[in-house]
Image 1 (cartoon, rainbow, N blue to C red):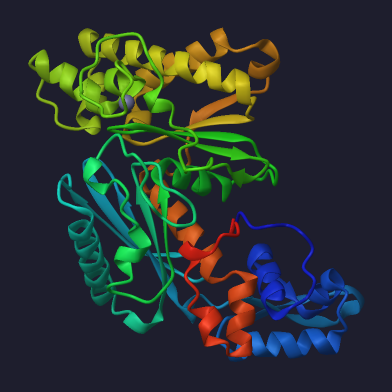
Image 2: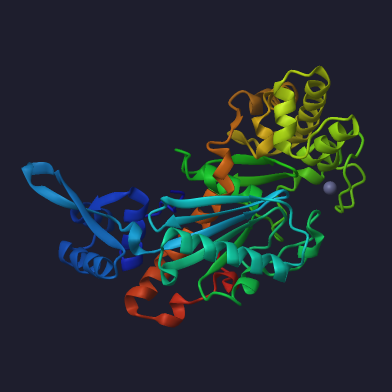
Length: 408
Ligand SMILES: [Zn+2]
């Protein structure tokens, strides 16, 4: 879990966060870490068990041969829903409070309606999944939404999308609140890829670029273990850097030939279609490349070179530990090889020497997992758990999208 590692001061919510971060803890370990008296720890743990958030699990031999019961998060405390609105598909998932995936579904097709219509559709999708899973709708704790566009944080306002322009200025959480009172957070999909990656990294203060190579091109920036969103949520919009080549798809970003319009999955679909190939999606382009067709391989290598060239400038500037590639196009070995070659050829030795360039772990569901981490971190934050323990209903129902403080 990509949680803060600062030492908890010992409120009920902070004890909960410590256990959530560690996986399991004994009461003695909590007392040791917080400096609280064992009796105080017991009282606070009892509150969390009483709220259904923690449960006892097994025993472990402790020093002196005594055996202590361990505590872990009770996954049945509730669940969150996550949705990922891509250019060619919409995926949704349900994840329990302990972060375990309960269900995932994907529906193909692109959405061309307005924001109200989109959110109505997404909410119906979530309700259908909850019903099909046999879960109690009242135990839904929050919703995380991924969008292929810059999203202002924490308001969830879609800002100047180069793609799906009908969503411009839509405040996604507000639209969801017509249907549900639970907290809702919206986030750029490449940022969610970065969050999913961060959750699996062993480095606490990691520096990462998570590049989403799908129908469009986006990038999540992780600096010092935290997502760097920029002032308006537009950090990492590398897809709209000026690039060499011929624009194959139109883009409303305002740059004449942006990287996305010459080298994205969408651009390659357009280019191959023009040459008579039967391709509709990034996956079709990847599959054509795998047949070894020299024309397709050449097109993939050229696109990879263009992407790598743009990334090399950012990598030189940012000096990340890793460039992680996700999205459908990251499955093309020809494209990825060309990106790698450009990066190692063009980056400064001091930057390239320790640079790791690799596909993301479990790229298929990374945005959904990222969205579930984002919303779980919000609904299980120390402040919300403390409010729950106090019985403070107003604080529990607080809208995170109105909260001006960073929650991650
Ligand atoms: Zn563009």
